[in-house]
Amino acid sequence: MVMTGNYASAYGAKLSRAEVIAAYPITPQTSIVEKLAEFVSSGELRAKFIPVESEHSAMAACVAAQTAGARTYTATSSHGLTLMHEVLMWASGARLPIVITNVSRAMAPPWSVWVDHMDSIAQRDTGWLQFFCQSDQEVLDTIIMAYKACESRSVMLPAMVIEDAFILSHTSEPVDVPDQELVDSFLPAYAPELKIEVGKAMGFGSLVKPDQYMEFRYKAMQGMEDARERILSVEKEFKHIFGREHGGLLERYRCDDAEVVLVAAGSVASTAKDVVDAMRAKGVRVGLARIRAFRPFPHQELRALGSKVDGLAVLDRSYTFGAAGAMFTEVKASMYSLQRKPAVKNYIAGLGGRDITPRTLEKILEDMLVVSKRGAEDEVEWVDVAGLPRRWR
Amino acid sequence: MTKGHKELPLTPVSDTPSTINLTGLWRVVRPVVDLSKCKKCTLCWKFCPDAAIELAEGEPHIDLQYCKGCGICSFECPAKCIVMVKEVGR
Ligand code: SF4
Ligand code: SF4
Image 1 (cartoon, each protein chain N blue to C red):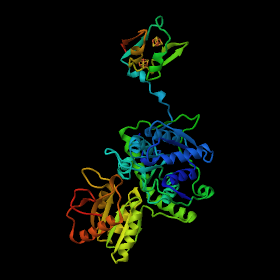
Image 2 (image 1 turned 180 degrees about the vertical axis):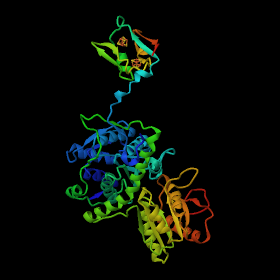
Image 3 (image 1 turned 30 degrees about the horizontal axis):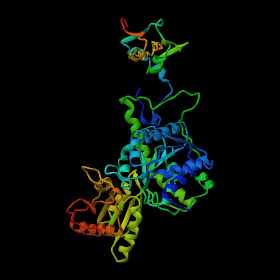
Image 4 (image 1 turned 135 degrees about the vertical axis):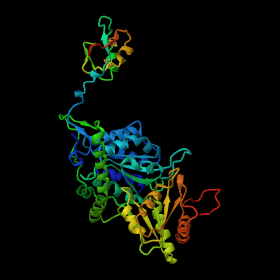
């Protein structure tokens, strides 16, 4: 079928047999929940659809339903996601493997409805797995895989599947929609060890004194660490059944023998693959490493890559004020323990939906080739800002 | 007794209901209802944050095991028939 990223999300949730969907509309997420509402009203999807009065309530409804043993789903974007923030923490602390789509969009002001990763990056510390997707197919597949990985006994944490606003959410691409029976064989019904049960009095989320609080946090940490292996094993099984894979935690594209590698997340990575091909055709040894999982972060995979290249150009589609791009900070930290460290430079680009063109990516890689030999003037550079002397287009 | 992380569930779950918390022990002032003036409007019952008020044929009866003495019922009562008196000798 030919469909948008948003419909791919809706089909992903439907094929995963989400049992409770609670949602509040926000641009550009709206068509995800509209489509799901259609599926529910037509009877194609047997689920309870709860229209709520805010995103905070949407997540609260998911938390409640998931605590009662239902598989839940919601979708949101930017201000909706940040309004959920408090309850996102609850979901992970309560070890509820909820899966949501966030259509990543800039935060206001200045008001903007276009792609930017600030909303998602701001949820970095909520204890959620975060997957940045580069195609509509990956969105659909990742939702199904995320439920399976997250519902593992050893993980039991929620996941956020991230689509870039408009570039994926509203762009139609061919998407293979797998058979329901196949998905059912891959993803069994949700059966948590602990849930609310009628006739059995239990208190969830009770007060824990300082003598035991840390132990619960330690367990959540272990869940996130175990997720690394589960993401990989689930994807392997997915590939076996459906014939597709998307790169685990870190997708590497033409990185063997590369001098310089672009590190990026989201839809820009697919543009970057074309750029890498074009530059390679001219004999320039460049590659792409796509951060697919931002949480858990692929430290080991990046170290293995970093030890073999001269430079990593880290592109961030958001900025952490007072520091640098969040991806850059993580990548650079990963390199610290290496004997032979590559040069690492941060390129801030594409905020608020500004196009990151193939020409811009080529210029970034060309700059990094120079930086890897001579060092950087600035460790963090804002790309394509009007009024700055450098030209990037 | 402190438990090792392996002995704990994934998230704190207790099998004891919260009714074991006798919040009445927190009280320093106690509501006293003059039922002869009560209009049976049920406002005190609606507002009590501890659900410590039960209605018997519309009349409020306060469960002092749980009433924490916040005084909201007294404040809200339109007939002004709930007064807060100091707890003594507890
Ligand atoms: S004093 Fe407070 S807790 Fe006690 S009955 Fe009145 S409203 Fe309830
Ligand atoms: S608020 Fe006052 S008048 Fe109303 S039911 Fe309670 S005690 Fe009676």
